Image 1 (cartoon, rainbow, N blue to C red):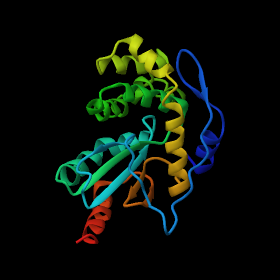
Image 2: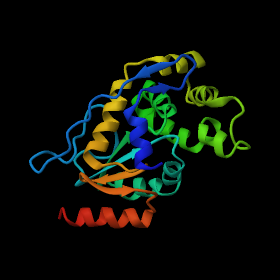
Image 3: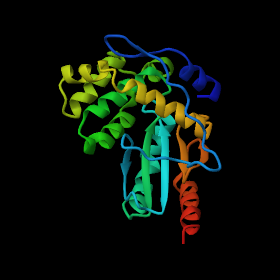
Image 4: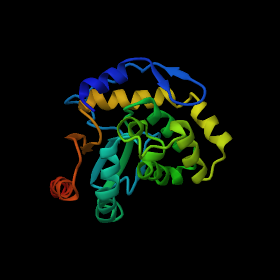
Length: 228
């Protein structure tokens, strides 16, 4: 998705895609980092993996409905986790950057689960995009779930151990809406996000595209070398 399309999506009233409609307005954009200010701030709301005291911090802005993000999740992230996060070299932060309202609904389900189940549910969303992602219905109708986005998200929530009623309650709960919008606008203000996934290493955006393991390895190794 282009930057223009993203800003249009982020700058308007957005409809959360679920059985009952909920509207929310984006919070004012956070100020961009300055020479005297931090390039990144980790908050209690962030979902993270690895050692918070690692020498390098990697932030990924992604959307569960993004097929490029799903590709990164399947092909690149497992190796990054194995070789950098699990070894204590890199602290990883995942942040939602919604491309469409369905991403907000999916995030709210993930946030209803115990914190230690968050990443497994995000992985479930990525690996099962045809079951719920409206993009499949638009571009690949033969692969799309015949039951629609809402039914697909309920199905995945049930796989994660929730009841259909719990999934609906999570999606209709509005307490996360302002935070979802704030995180997205802060990310755009700080890093001029062009699309997803966007990778930020120690507060510096490395761009918005699919990152192969070899490409990301070079970026992380360079960052680590600078900390010795």
